[in-house]
Length: 510
Image (cartoon, rainbow, N blue to C red; front, side, top):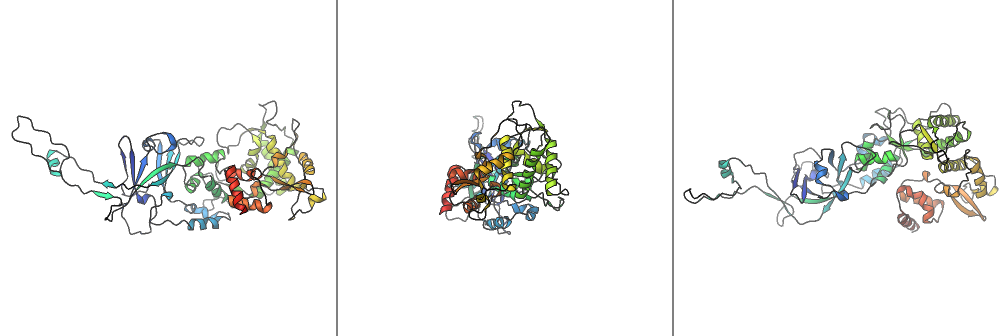
């Protein structure tokens, strides 16, 4: 809440509660000379702990911090203008189209309940509530508090206590006290009067992960390229966003954002710890962004090469001995050596970037954030096989004439049998008989029948725009017809269900 002298009051009758707030807490005003604080907001509070709504306990609990979050923007973050994203112009246009006037904008206000003792692995106590206006014809009567002094003062001020009846020993009737009028005001639209306004708000709990799209977009503003890393990350050249800044941008509780980042969910699936932004992954100053597509490809290739050529004893999670693991630090060093050999010995590859590439292909015992690098891991066969598929498409060359020739736009297509052969060659030795499945290519490549033969073309989901409509356009530019099942691997990371995907495909056809 803003720090001014406007009325803020909590009324509790035992059955219903109203939180009274000034309108100035919620919206901007274009009239800077208007210092009136007459406009009030009434927020109804739930009497039940169930349903995720705002309760009296949320407000009175000393372990919670409760505050109103008004109009926020990514431009509030000082260094946001230095991001390297090409989407900055689009963001600016979107924000310019959402101009707030002096009229009340209920969508601009959110109420946050933040646990003071935050645990990023548990967000049950954190709440983000949208304050939705409830239409009502009620009028709110505001009266100043009445001072209650001694009997004499009470008589002079019109004490509202009832006059006791005199005892039989007293002479004469008791003189009745007169009611004294108080300077009351009506807050609300009263016919024929130019009175201040009053709004009733209902706090509506937002669903889990309500910020996913905005979080994903904010992270994508900062694309880290290990081949061309940003300059020294000093205070004057900040790169990436902290969890506090992301919470401000996403208009959400800090606990919810920290949970998403720590567990890589709700829009943070591809979040990258910006190298050298902090001394440890749990530091509040740790900054996040995303890895460039070229960086992802080069790191993936280095991982596959390291697994193929490494002298390490590779341990797979499908082995009979579930307790056996391999030392991760040795694998990280092998990956770094292969990357430097390929990209140049003078270039460095940080542990954060290598772990970002390895995390998806290893199984390990986690005790907190996914940014915590474990000591021991096991390799996941299917995930390593997917990386090997990327390696084939990026570094391999089909022998067949039909594969090396262009299909319609100069694209390289692989005949299925030839691709499977090349794919198997790039798989590291496994302790069990393992055959790669074409099902693993979903979201990596697309297939078509060409000259009566099934052929495959590289089309990774990671290279597509994050905006759903732009992503579907890119997909349709590659191929005219898509089934929901084919499109799902390319859109499910955007938290879209089959119905939403079907609707998006239909809209694209129009």
